[in-house]
Image (cartoon, rainbow, N blue to C red):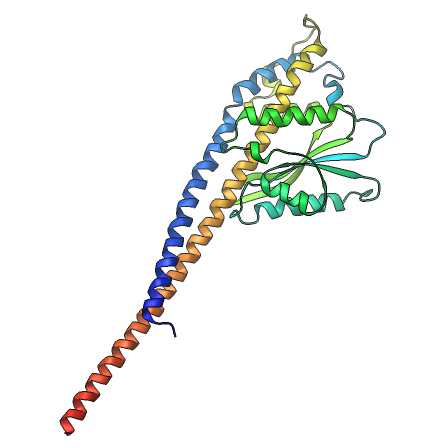
Length: 305
């Protein structure tokens, strides 16, 4: 059995671990709330865009190149969103499992369907390189916490440029969707080609309004220079906001997962410390009893003399 000194040293070590994990839990809680609040910053923009979209939504083919599927290609670009570091439970593993499941469920893969990857987060980059896949771009070093719209804009512009090349038939993003503080759901969402319904749904979700509540204008607006130029200029901003919101969701999910993992680690450390304290007390009691017994035996032996 370990000595009392060794057990005390282990108790101190475990309690220090508990303090560290508790601090990390609190930090993750604050960061999670900040990521949630950042989504609300998009509300005025979403409300303004939704108002404009309600007035021109009757136009056909309003999304232009962003909604058309290129012909003659079976390649798909997957955007993987994972964390910069570990200690977040199954957060990263769930994204990777979802990616593998998505590819395996493709009826044509792996024979005709080819995949390229964009990684956001060091763990996503490591996964792509470890599995020998083709990594088109890595934005791990550009991701800050909290995530800013400027950082998202750089990534989205790259995705738009890749889509416009006509090389890919589809661009999808794999990430953990924030459900609650204790639940995150790995999902695959299509970024391109995009549908008007998806844009409207996003704007309604963020703005808290609906197209019907804003009201559709019956008739034609005089738009200069023309509606296509307007869409070409504004649609990338909408896509930036949509993908930025998705990345904020992923960040909130990451901090929630890390908070939960650190809470479990803290609770486990506290249980371990309590168990070691009990062992230490029993060892100490045993040592005291042994010493008392030896003293009593010595006194008794001296009486006989």
